[in-house]
Image 1 (cartoon, helix red, strand yellow):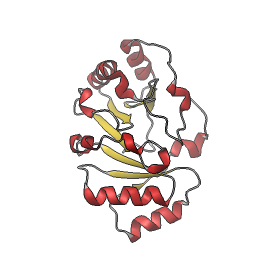
Image 2: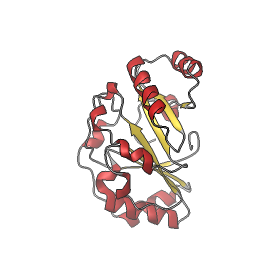
Image 3: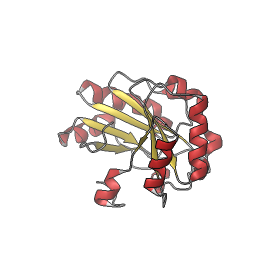
Image 4: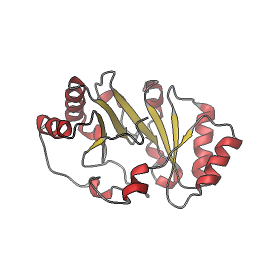
Length: 196
């Protein structure tokens, strides 16, 4: 988990989902095309060795993202790829320093029918499975899924909207779930500002 550590974000454009609570709807549209070596040079210019490739949906550009993460790994970077979980993880050829942070879409997203559950068995112990929790229905959905299929990696519950954090943490403790309750730290520091 890299939360709280300096990280460079590389945001891809386009997404195959339209989650109700998406905080980056601007990334759904086509963006500026850039060459992988130029992106790598810019990432390295920040002097940070942690990179998060997010979207949109990075796996829609599997060939280019594979080239990017391999180039970043060669430069000594640790890379996290944030994916919505609707595309087969096998489309990315990743090395030992590239990790998947995969969502399972809960009912509040409006996209839960797009989950590709076979991806869970393709995750490694150094990946992360994330559930964005907006209300009790999402919590129950996530809990039931975890009762049926435990992933080989850490699990995160990320609250969104007006969900009471204490209530969520207390439910997790009461139900003895082995999950992390984590916030989007950058939102508490910089708000909804783009590019920080």
